[in-house]
Length: 272
Ligand code: ARG
View 1: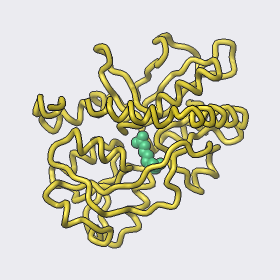
View 2 (view 1 turned 45 degrees about the vertical axis):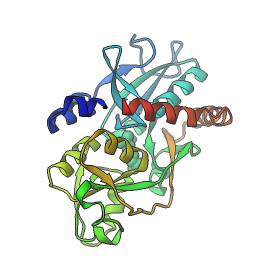
View 3 (view 1 turned 60 degrees about the vertical axis):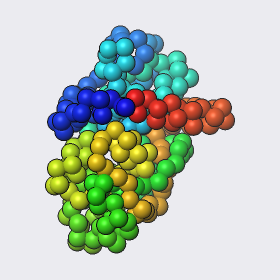
């Protein structure tokens, strides 16, 4: 039995655990725990990562050795980029819809957060090569699995989506849909559990992780279509040096088969 079943948690506790007890703007030092300055070009180099750690298996909170830690396959990639640069990785857990602004204003150096490339985003920031691909999924209460088996069946329904995500755009394109846009995926899950929304659209791997860990949810056969089904890393517009470094690390990780390895390990960790 997994930890959710064992504890038979109340909904609030589930939300608390999945959001790292509500620490929205928490900073973690992934490597050593020592804090450093934010400038990535000084002698003691720091690479500051901006991410929204509500997204298992990409980035999520997990108690490791009794300590709240941000883990996930995006984090493993970030560690590799930092290592290749000889920099210390610092992680900022932020609201997803604030990430690209934080990048443009220089408060974070890179964004790795299951970020999908869109033409709009490509105008605002620098985007790396695609490092992973996944499909979109529709999550509902178990009893509604067959009722929402097609995208058409979502017309006029109440949909929960993450603020500023491409899923919000997908939902906006569904005729008559009533949107509830929220900051954290766990909040959307609560809305589903408490009958305040009918369905949610999220990345397939994230959907799978939540359905495994939270009782009473299911993934339907509906297949949301997106143009760009891959994930990229964001850097500040014009920071071509860092972008080249990021792509170089991604090429290395791909050729070593590391990314699939990280995905598998993070998916396992998300289920424990
Ligand atoms: N792939 C979607 C997007 O780029 C959602 C990403 C959400 N990421 C997160 N860590 N919550 O809009």
